[in-house]
Amino acid sequence: MKSIKYLTVLAVAVPLVLGIGCKKKEEAVQAPPAEEAPITVKKEEIVVMVPDAVKGKWKNIKIEVLNKQTNQKSTIVVPMGSEVAVPGSKMKVKAENFLPEFKMEGSNVTSASNDPKNPAAQIVVTEDGKEVFSGWLFTLYPSTHPFEHPNYSLTLVGYTPAS
Image 1 (cartoon, one colour):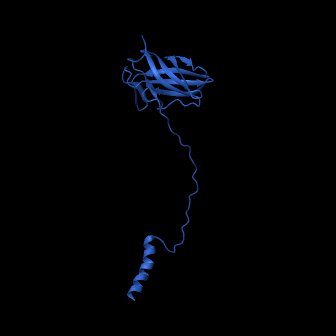
Image 2 (cartoon, rainbow, N blue to C red):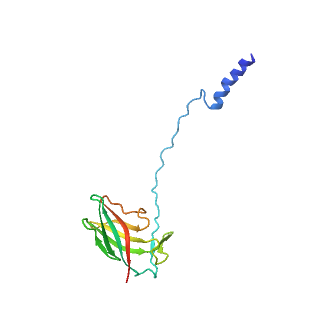
Image 3 (cartoon, rainbow, N blue to C red):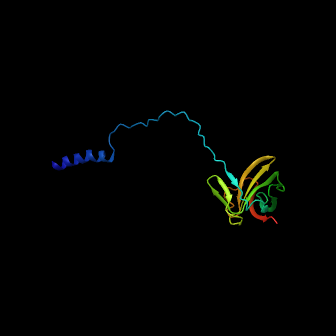
């Protein structure tokens, strides 16, 4: 008789402990969708500070252009502050700034020295007169914030000091 009581207790206790049994299924209650407020993200403006030790010390940058359709590579030389057409395309590249030792702290970008330890060029690319890229190309880290285009890739491959 004790074994029957023991089995009865087990038959009731085990499902309760495991959370199974004859419970009414609880229906998930969803809250009505809240009105979505637009999310405003304040984008910090990047401030580029070219130190006096760097200003005017670099003549041009050299950019390798890869035509992804033909797999042809060419190099264009872009004088600082000037714009050069990319052959065979409707694109132009302008060299805004060159920082031989690129350094970023918060929203400030500068060069730690005039030694090319981490060369970076700030460029603007236009196609058919419309800006399609504004950013930095890095010699040591070409895949960091690369120029994205279906037909062309641009890589910073060189730079020439001013005489």
